[in-house]
Length: 311
Image (cartoon, rainbow, N blue to C red):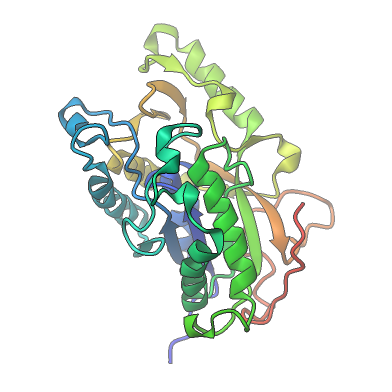
């Protein structure tokens, strides 16, 4: 019987394209290093704005056909990154995109924002127990920038880690599994500031209608809040190709990209994470790590314990 890959990574993202924007290089690198990557996307992104004019009819206030279209975009993006295991929480369309905070879509019966956290987490528990990830990546409690679906993804992922490790919870979903480490997606403030400054310096050469502010970029934190940075330069072309696959949501131009607001921001080759739970990183000098799996080779995958603390 073939042993499962030691590097097993599970990412929990809110909408199609979130994964490529913030973790695309990390996913591609993990695959290239022989790891197994599982992506769970919580909604189809039905409420997203549409960039290409010829696809504007897909929007939720017109044909309401954007969700199924974005399923295809996500599949194309994962092909670019080499990820073969990508799923939707509870199955495609189980939870609907909730829209931005405070809009009427938040209160739709099947919006992800209204989902019962334990019920939604049970769907993720099944994935955790099936795939046995050593590392899980998701957002911080604010979802990086306050989007309801990002906040809910954090809640569901956090709860699923707890429940998946409990043998008494839903044994029908498989044997209990303890995730070794949980990370939150981050972005380095100095790196983003430098990228935005370079874009501003381009002046009339700036290909976008404007330049993003720090507040518009999810997960920006100070350098001191970052535990691990993943050098994805060797995989940047694949990340850019994955972003281009999300053509209804993203436009890529060189070292920058923009969303539907046409405000440019850097396409980062290095991706950043904060360890919030599980096996500590072995960095006695307090320096930043460069591997989400560092030091886990000697830790039995199914017996590692977590204390539930967050830093």
